[in-house]
Amino acid sequence: MNVALSRRTRTAQANADVIAILAGKGGLGDGLRLISLPGLPTLIGRGLWSRLHEKLYFFSHPNPIAFIGSFNPSGDVPESRPDIVREIGEHDCGWNALIGITEPTLVAGLLAHARRMHARTPGLFYRFGTESRGVLQASGASIFFWPRLGTHPILRCLEALSPKAHVRIAASHLSAHSAIEAMLRLARRGVRLEILTEPTLRRVTPSAEQRLCDAGICFTRLDSADAVPMHLKFVLAEDGATQWTAFGSFNWTLSSMHLNHEIAVISTDRHLFDIFAERWDALDRAKTTETSRR
Image 1 (cartoon, rainbow, N blue to C red):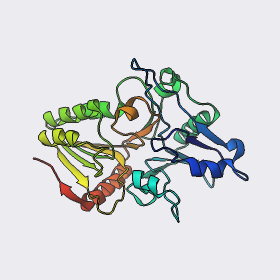
Image 2: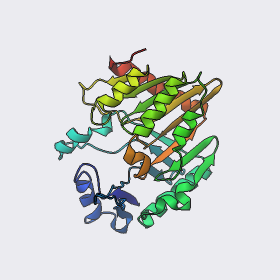
Image 3: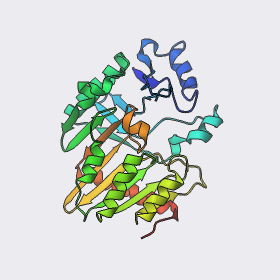
């Protein structure tokens, strides 16, 4: 078994306990890889730190399958670090998704990616390499890796929609200026846009919410009473007879769009679209606070 974990996490020492177990006696030995990614230097002397944020789980038996999504294992019984769970939420019981991929070409490409990440720490110039520029494609699905250069693939697909399109976005984080501006452009062109987010004001700021609502976008936060985190990241787009969905580890934040190691899938599979549409409906039923202005 091989496991690659981020050594640097946003919440200090969030991985410390599990690292101690996996690195200890009877643990994984060389199968455990702790990754510290280089940051980008800035003129003010403080680096912009990159993190390993992608979520990729691969199993070889009984048949090869790779899972991509938003799920971070967190929470324990009994809970040894309640301070961390209070900060990030208990994802074991929160709103999350993992999608199993079995198409042989995609599985092989994802396995090769996982092995490269485990074998060596990506360097400062990873974004200029062939892997970050590459795309895994098969069976109506395209898989992208970050950090990468060029236009954000999901934003590129959104900007290609017609004014009659309908877009639903589930976002646990939404703060990047470029992402918000892209959503405002969609609304100005007449695209019907709905956004569902979690209640944390740090992850989706009130100022971002206000701008989106002022543009006539249907913006909704989930209830915070049960303290269940909403960590989903997906997009549902309908444009005439065309339907596609995007999902993965990506957030609409500066670090996720330009610094972190992320993974996302854009798929035209109708069955997958219907599954995410059902998840949207479940989120919609769970909402309690609507701040949309139509």
